[in-house]
Image (cartoon, rainbow, N blue to C red; front, top):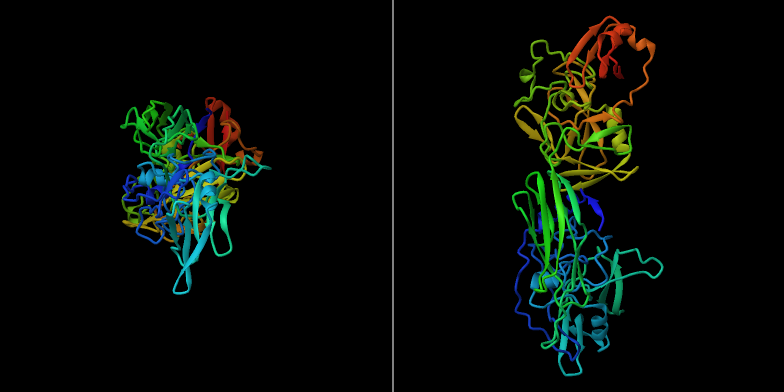
Length: 527
């Protein structure tokens, strides 16, 4: 199996936050009906655990019913290959929610049902459902549940187009309407019901012979979450569910669906065990890394972006809110709390890489607050996805991702607009402490990322950037060195004040420095 570097599950975590906490081991009193076929058919639909009207709506290959129109209930991504038959697996709502041998019917078992003949039936002159009569005199009645005069339910069988067998996005379903009574294939994200079947008493059990997992190795940064998916063979095994166990729950916890939640840094082994008692297992080694100063992402843009905000302990932690050009950590965001309260003037217009830059001071190693242009480049070249707790930006250039936690902005002691991410840029429009503003990146639901003017004293978070390649420095014109220069190290501390650039090499040891010219221009050079 391939090594899989994951940060896939932020979107999945959004769905699981809403629907993953339900007890999935409900029993049922359903006994089913014998129509003289190879299996027993349920007389009722599986209901999920919600307080809405969507308790019978399921996407394919997910035991989680839809909660509302904004939450699909997806478990495995809809383009993920879970195999050709998901009956009695962790992907099967009937097996997960009901248990006791109930499972999704295969396409062949549905074809056997349809072959008996399907008749619509009416109440008060109005079609309300469909009836199937067995040759043994028993019958199955399926009622319309939403007034649409149709009954639709999933099979366990995936659909493959003979011209594109790599497309895993569709599955077979059964649809009874006034105009059609038969099999259809549909996108896995379509909402259909679940009508279970189970084997007849005395049917020989088929044991599991092999368990595999989607990944042998997973590497996560603290704060990330991911899911590993099972593959159980043979496809006709009687019970193909697996259970999971972590070798150290204090490092990584895992639930019954293979969802990994890091607790601290370290390495564990996740073991998946077949639930049929066959003893078949598979393992996945999971390594959890601490967030470090050197965590960076190449989005295919002009600079590298940090995986996390300044002051954050994980990628989902908003980190520290700062006032503009104020690396000091404050609890109150107002002019009176500013270190520049006496003069009411911020001492720098462009703080990038200087002693006034919180990113440089707190993270060092070349990190600095991004310019508006660098942030605009990020916005222009990424797709935004609203996920639980924030936003995921995916590069249109190379597919790399970063997560922006919903951080809001802080004024005095209050946090405003908690569901949006506000990101500081490096240059203010005015150095006046009270009335000055700077362009602040804003990422929110429904809207495209944009900029808003943020007061210098309000608190926002910082997502740092650094130049690519370390020594890949910008070109420098002679005029840049013509006047007095301030020289800073990469930690933002001033190390020299020079009349011009003529003595740079003689005064400074070899290394990388940040130069602020007399005109206020900030440059990075290598000596």
